[in-house]
Length: 128
Image (cartoon, rainbow, N blue to C red; front, side, top):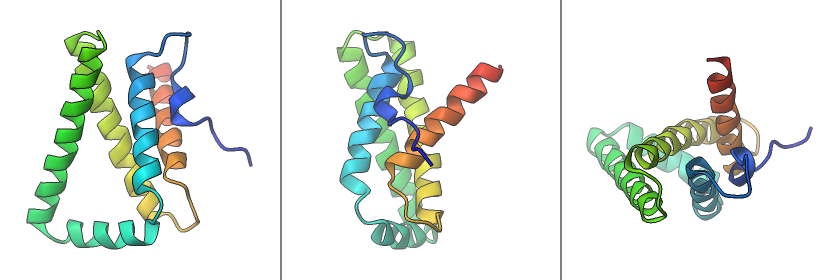
């Protein structure tokens, strides 16, 4: 079975990267950093989900990441609304992909569910 395209190419429509291309590249880089130890990530996730204070901290970290991505998109000349929407979309893609990754029974690279989540998002948008 062939793998879906990596997130960096998941939204590419032209030679100039879109806001979602840039967000996908950020998620791909994050996956390269945190995606190397799924066993540890699964344990950490289990502990985090069992503790309200840790869940809150995790949400705060995710919000900070989203704000940082939004800020970087704005610095690259992307308008406020588009930058916010792209960064929030990336946050949703990450949350869904991470959950799928830690719960997967098979050996999975974090980049795969990220790419698959972007593909699902494209399908949802196309169906609209």
